[in-house]
Image 1 (tube, rainbow, N blue to C red):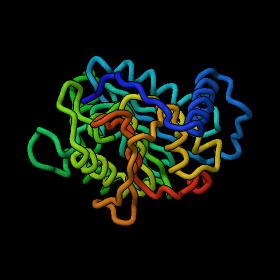
Image 2: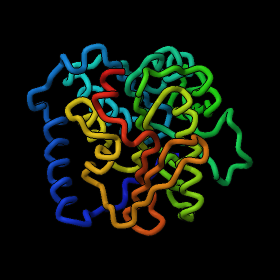
Image 3: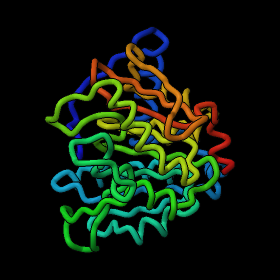
Image 4: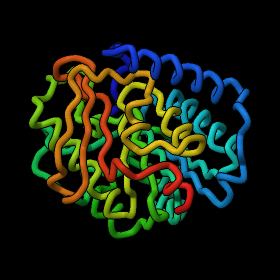
Amino acid sequence: MPVSEHGAQRASSSRRVRLTVMGLALALIAFGGMAANPTPAAAAGMKVVVIVGPAGSSTAKYITSAKRYASQARSYGAKVIEIYSPNATWTKVKSAAQGANVLIYLGHGNGYPSPYGPFSALSKDGFGLNASAGHGHYNVKYFGESYVAKYINLAANAVVVLNRLCYASGNSEWGAKNPTKAVAMKRVDNFAAGFLRANARAVFAEGINSASYVLYGIFKTKRTMAEIFESAPSFSGTRDFRFRSVRTPGYTAWLDPYAPSRYYRSVVGKLTLDAGDVRAG
């Protein structure tokens, strides 16, 4: 389920304040059509796939955000494929996602642990897509981590961005009880697992805020995935913590709650991987 756009984060040090100011400036540049000295050559051959699944009344808002991401990626010289509800079917997504360097998904999230029965790799921790094309924004069918891991092969060192989802960053559905730390950790670890098996090396989840900083970091800097995560305008750092992934051994998860039990930001992957490696594929 989508989440409400409530919540405010704050920086915890002068360094983080500087990062926030810089991040806001970068977001204005990216979305204002004034990208500073874009270098298309650096993005030559880079493939970005942007997907919006059916999310009811929130779908139009998600498509607006997705089009901004698509425009931002194109300004850097990337090839961009956009797939939007009511035509975001599994067949289209599976075909488009092959070899993607960056995969961005906005829509419903069906994670685990949740109130909806036992874990199922067929439906949990993947995409919520149109059950059939052209039938509105409420005909949702979930394609879980087993579909992602088995049928999608991303480019080497690919990055996945999960935006406006429930569960992916550890959060609950809007209006539901906030999760415990242990539950949030399991949700983040589970949601990233299928994408990491599909060749991704980092999975960012932004529950309520823009993920434009991820695109900027990948295309315009040499930052590591950890540095990109910390460069977000919404980075708090007052309660952040890391843990070793259980689902994907050798990988690290990092959560950055802005308040107790408010888990709206996470990244899982090889956090030492740098943006140059992502661009190199």
